[in-house]
Length: 93
Image 1: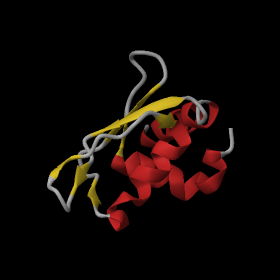
Image 2: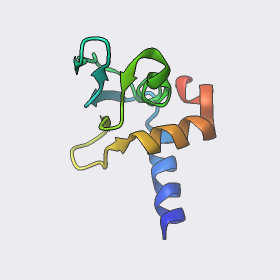
Image 3: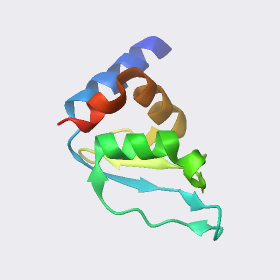
Image 4: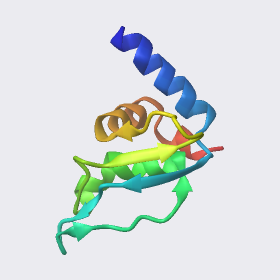
């Protein structure tokens, strides 16, 4: 069942990787405040969340919103998995 969910998420993300996305819940560890992230492509949002910890951000509570209303958001673990699976191909739309 979990594998089917992962496949559905991967398929949806791959199809919409160039769509607009919004990231919420990212904390700048230097200032200890929530960072304001501008709109970006879904692929870039996934890349950022997957790699943000090395840049000084806490993304444990991060959520990536994209697509139509009601589309499930992506959590940190989803982003790490998708970045490991597709890498830079997510940036090509």
